[in-house]
Amino acid sequence: MAGEKRDIKVRICDVRKVFKTRIGENIALNGVSLDIEDNEFVCVVGPSGCGKSTILNIIAGLLEPTSGEVFVDGNKVEGTGIDRGVVFQQYALFPWLTVKKNVQFGLKIQGKSKAEREEISMKYLKMVDLEKFANSYPKELSGGMKQRVAIARAYAVNPSVLLMDEPFGALDAQTRTQLQSELLLTWEEERKTCFFITHDVEEAIYLGRRVVIMSARPGRIKEIVDIDIPHPRDQAVKMAPRFMELKNHIWSQVYQEYLAVRK
Image 1: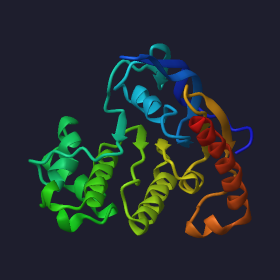
Image 2 (image 1 turned 90 degrees about the horizontal axis):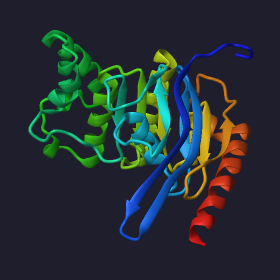
Image 3 (image 1 turned 120 degrees about the vertical axis):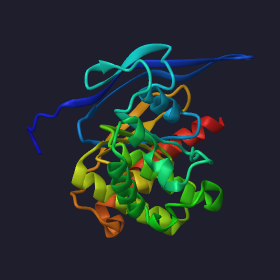
C-alpha cells in the first residue's frame, strides 16, 4: 500500500564473494546490496553462474562473504539458524528416515512434542499431496516426490525467512504448476518472507512482488522490477497483458546477460 512503512527483514550490504581456484580468483559477487521487506516475496533471475545461489547461501549462513555483511531482523548472519529455512536445487533427505520423519526432523530439534510433530508434518505432507507416502522411505519415491518432501520439511519448521533455490526445477510441468499455486496460496495466507531463485521468468513474475535481475559474472544487481499484479493471483493471470509485458521486459534483460556470458 502506498505510504505504508515496512520493516526490513533481510539486509544485504555491499556483499562481495571471491572464490580462489587453481587458475586464479573467481569473483562470484561484486558489491550486491538489497533490502528485503518483512513478508515480501522476492524472486531472483539471471544467467547461470551469476551468483544467485551464492547470495542465497550467504543469507543462509552456509557461506561467508569475502566482504560486506548480511543481516536478518537486524542481527548479523554469522552461521546457519532455524530462523531461515532452505530448499536446495537437489533434495537433501535422510535416506534412513521415513518421509514423515524427514519432515519432523527440524520440529524435533525445536523441541516440539510427538503430537505436535505428527500434526504439523501431516499438514505439510498433505499440502504437497504426499500424505499417503508418510511412512515410505526416500528410495521409494521419484525425484520430484523427494523434492516435495524437502519443501514440506522447510515449511514445517515455520522459519521467518524461506530461502528457495530452484525448488521446482526438477518437477514435471503439472506438479510444478500445482506447487507454484500452493506456495503462493501459503504466502498469501502467512506472508512469510521468501527469497526464491529461478531460471523461469514466468515463475518469477507469478510468485514475486519484486524480481531481481542479476548481471553476468561477476554478479551484480542489474535491475529490480516491481510486479504490480494484485493478489490473489491464479494461473490465469499468466495470460493477462500486463503479465506478458513484464515477461517480455524481464526476459529481454536476462537474455542480454546470457549473450554477455557467451562472448
